Image (cartoon, rainbow, N blue to C red; front, side):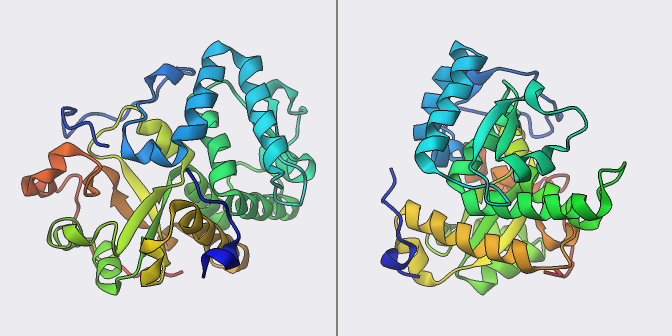
Length: 300
């Protein structure tokens, strides 16, 4: 794919002193805490320009925050799963009995709370709008057929995993992709360290994952969705790479019938070279409670 064929405009570090106990427990942050976002972390870099502006609006209050999101939505003119104009509504404006995904598909209105979880969700509607629309369309279609019950079913579970906890693993090297799928962490993160950012890279997609990474811990593990990309991809500007991923992944999500949890490969996020200072030492990868051995075949 060329820059001209995608037709996008050009877009717009590691805290080496940071450290955490490798076995820090999982924890959920309470609502709010927008001031806790450290934009120096590389997993936030893709959102920094817009995110800083939204952060200031969120710190000013719920109404200024929604106003800022909706100003961007009007300017971008993105669409939700069934072609409705994207906009953001207060959570309390979701009608009683309406499903979250169904309401987004039918009206374009994304119920949005004044918290970090929904903050990161909204950011992804701008970073990967086609993927978000594809996820919404499939969720809404499944709800139309099965309704909203106590369980989602396999496809909706996989769509939710993607939306909440996925990273996009873009790879032009089959050996790196194989190392990921075969849990060969030393091959992926140590032996092939020089290949990161020139033969593979990661984009965080899951908004719950970004919320967890506000207070990162070593065992934080994503569901990696693999995208094979051409070697030329790594010479493209970020906006073009994002547009390529947005197009390729959204087409796959719309067309693949047998989505399930095994469509992903686990990826301990803080093992990514350049993302966390302690992983500069190879011993970082010796913790088998985080970098677990295993073998399996990916179905999708």
